[in-house]
Every structure is written in structure tokens, then in C-alpha cells.
Length: 458
Ligand SMILES: Cc1ncc(COP(=O)(O)O)c(C=O)c1O
Image (cartoon, rainbow, N blue to C red; front, side, top):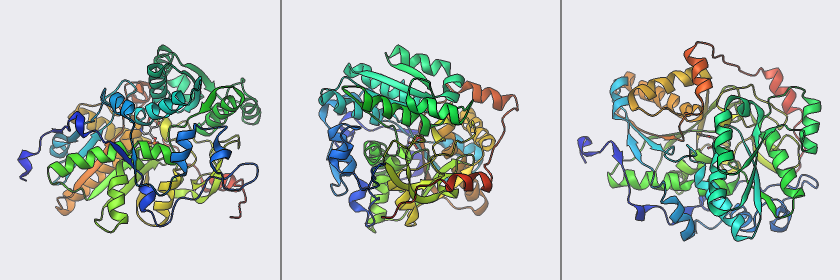
């Protein structure tokens, strides 16, 4: 197909919204390691996980073998409100860069939550409702996940309690008000409402919080409140599974035009958007059918893949959650107040961690001023004002496209544009005023945190 015939936006029809999620674990030779019970350090089965998660979601969490899992019709109907998401050919960015590379991005910001998070929020709220629960608790970093879950909970008529990382709560008051408008309660974390919040506040006075702290609080409240379960917006196998609608749609759109990406890029916080985007491509790679270069991009201030250890660790700071084997900076690690709140997590998806460990993907870290330079460049030519998290992927995509300019290679680059940054204007203001700083943790800081990793023999 000639290049000219590829439109700016490739849309699929409503009927082409995926009917099944793709479970990449089915094609992995080395499966992600099981979650461990924080008290006994033994692998957790269905019954162990029931006090925390909804039953159907536990089944998905533990299923390493079923390649395709049906998407309930009610969820497909909800997806129709904002899916299929467009796949955009970044002609304007290519022109501005003067690169021979062909750049595509899958845009997930086209819903009120402003990000891909709604893809899993509606699923988790749906199964909670189906189980007859009263409500759900959760954490939110940047606020996108909390907003998405508030929307999904309002739609299904269940209660939603959100623990929001304090730094984001303060930086993004309007994000908080969106969640409250959807009927959720929003508490800055660490709070003085939970045992774990009080403990963290006592140990780290004045802390601006982290996703790890907020998770501990949300889990505590879920397990102590009748009719509630905890839901998580990233990291878990089930969340990556739900997010595969991103990759399945992207692949279907590219296939229509006979386009095969050489490089696939995504930002990585807990790994859900990246896992969702790459899964169908990774499946082909794992089955030996095709090869792709896959790049995870993370902040230099919170470099779990690039400087972390592949080890069992707690998923939360309060050490009440199961342990996962993942690339981690240590559950004690509290990253600096970087503006990409959704990437400030100490760990990484066990699925992606295993794939990275086995050499199926690369990772790189980038500094936040360089990320905002890329965001600004992108906004000026492509029109969309990107979320700081998504802009990590933009940075890497631009860097790869500029390499093509040097070498003359016409590579095809696909990246995930996970969301919009309209609630991140404090960050953009800092950047515009030249007040943005970069913080990179020292080896000493990381070593202190690694020293607290739990000793697990399994
Ligand atoms: C817009 C956006 N992109 C990316 C992420 C990172 O999360 P994940 O790695 O789970 O996709 C977040 C998390 O809050 C987000 O809000």
C-alpha cells in the first residue's frame, strides 16, 4: 500500500472493538512468578486472595494458560462510548522532525478520565457489581486511574473511595473535583484515617506520599469494610489483560494497511498500558512468528527497570499487600515529586518484569525536562496536549525518529499516547517558567532501599 493512502487517523468500526482480551502469559515459556502471602511468604491461591479482590478478577489474575478471555457484552457496550480509540499517523511530527521514520500513536486520551485507565476501571467495577459488592477502594497517583474508577463506579451505581498520593492531590485540585463530581470520596495519602497512614506519617514526617503508601491505605480500608474490595489500576496481570484492547485495536488498524511496526514504545509506571499495547505483538514474538523492538520508558527519578532489582517485594509501602516478583526499587523507596505522578511506583508488572528479564524487551530512563521538551514539541505540531506520563513515550519515539534521520532508515515506530495533560498545568507552568528540575536518585539512596527488600526463598 502506498504511503499516501494511509489516513491521518485509522478508525476501526464499533464491531471491531475486541471481543476477547489476549492473555500473553499463555505464550510465555517462563510464566510470571506467583504472588506471595505477606504473612507466610507462600504462593497465594484463589481463597487467599478473596478478602482483597473480586472473585472473577482473581480467576483472571491466576490464569496463566487461557490465551483468549471473552469480554462481557456489557463491558463492550461501555467501551463503545469511547472506543475504538484512533490510531494516528503522526505526519505533522514526522515533518517537523524531518525524519524518514513513520510514526504512529495509539491515542487513549479520548474519554473524560483522559487516559487508558478506563479500559480496566470499567471491568473491575463491573465484576464488583456482579458480585453484589457495595463498593471499591483504590489508590491514585496522577489522578487518571481514580477518575476512571469514579466514572465506572458512578455508571454502575457502586461506591468508590480513592486514596490520592498527596503530592498529586495538592498539584491537581481539579482532578480531585472531577472524581468528587462522579461521586467518589477522595483522601490525600498518607492520611491520618488509617493505621498504616498514621504509621507512614510518623516514620516519614511531611512526606508527599507515593503510590505504594496509597495502596496500603486503600487495601486496609477494603479489608476492614464490609462489602468492599480493593481494585488496582496497574501492575497486576488482570489489569494488563484488560488493557490488551489497546494493542489488539492498534494491531487490527495497522494490519488493515499492511503496516508492521519495527519499534514499539510505551511509558511504564506499573506497566499496564505498555503491557496492553505490546501484548499481541509480544505474542507473535514469543511464538517466533515476528520480531519487534519493544522499549519501556520510565522516569530517571523512579527507574525500576533500569536500576531496580528483579526480586520478590511488597507491592505497597505498608507491606500489607501480596509480594510480587518484579523489577523493584524497594517498597520503601519514595520517589522525588516528579510531575509524572503515574510513573512514581517502586515496582513493575510481574509479566513485563519476566519478559524484560528474559530479554524480550528493552528499557530506558529519561529526565523530566527532556520529557516536557518532547511534550511541547508534540503539542505544537500534533495538537494534543499530552500527559506527562505519556510524554515519556513521546521522548523516546522522537529520539528513535531522530536516529533514523541520521542513518536514513525508514523505520516504523508505534507508541502509546496514554492520555491528555489538561490537569497537569502546574507541571507545564513550571516547565514554561524554566523552573522544572531533574532529580536522579543516587546509588546510595537506592542501596538503602534495596537493603530492606524481603528475604524470600522460593
Ligand atoms: C496517562 C497515564 N499514562 C501512563 C500511566 C502509567 O501507568 P501504567 O504503567 O500502568 O500504564 C499513568 C498512570 O497513572 C497515566 O495516568
